[in-house]
Image (cartoon, rainbow, N blue to C red):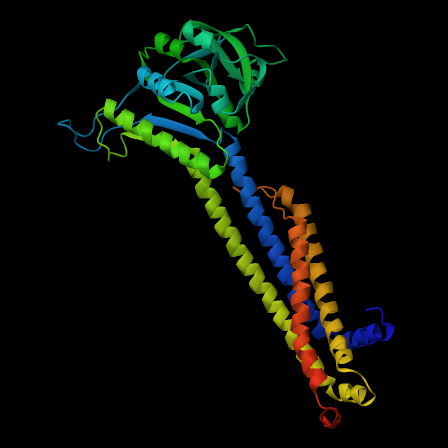
Length: 415
């Protein structure tokens, strides 16, 4: 590799065939470039999907009810199923060993909200104390609704950072202030933030027992939500959450007299199922990206092999002279291989540097749904380049071996 004369020969050959060498190198560099960019966007998709599921607890199960669609035990379809406090309490007690956090939630409609004669337009919901963890919220000031508030049906509310900015201007603390909800005074005990979007901060929360008592909710529940204790692996977590959903569904169908095959009466949303679906989709897309990138690289390597065949053909007479002067076969092989490896290495590293630089500069600024900060593992990309160089060496070996086996007399006679 340190033979100066051999390197001079390689550079002389490249100078004599600038366009051919450039096009060959471009095909190799573009293969690495395309592969790295595709892998970067595949990682960006995984980052984006992970970000979407970070907004709420990643193992959340939401249960709500609608209307029956099938006749069952003499009852007509079209019945509206209503979840009750007793359903929430039963599930919480029965599966206490599996449940990490739980909340029942009720939406309060047609409530008039005001603060010091100023009307406010936010949504109001009654929740349990576990709601904060299921929604992945954090406390900025004060505290959240707790079990004592539920037990005592306390007239307290928690507002968001957004509501604080919009209503309590000038840095005024809202803690201890009162909101008027349809003529009932509620004390503000805390300010929360949501790791999702600001859209999630347009809500005011109060204890669910207070919401039911003050706004004619009786014992009705809009939906119930749970997170399960984490398992050792993602696949095990999915299996356990599906079993939990199945068991709860059977109980609710039995207690509300719903047919087992009526899919619309009692509905479930399992974030782990969604995460698994998106992860599988992301993996399939990444496999497709690998396939496209590898095919592009193979095309570049084939181009290197073809160019080496042309080089051998053009230099056949020169090879014959070298052999007549005593050049060994492996010396001929080394001469051809060095040129193939040099072109492949320079082109491969050029494509790698350009693609990695492009991802580094533009990646953080890409604002596409489900794609966040496209990037690629440098070790993976570098390994790919070395594999490419090896493939280039293999592609150059066969023309080189063919050149080494040419009979000296035939080579000298070649025109």
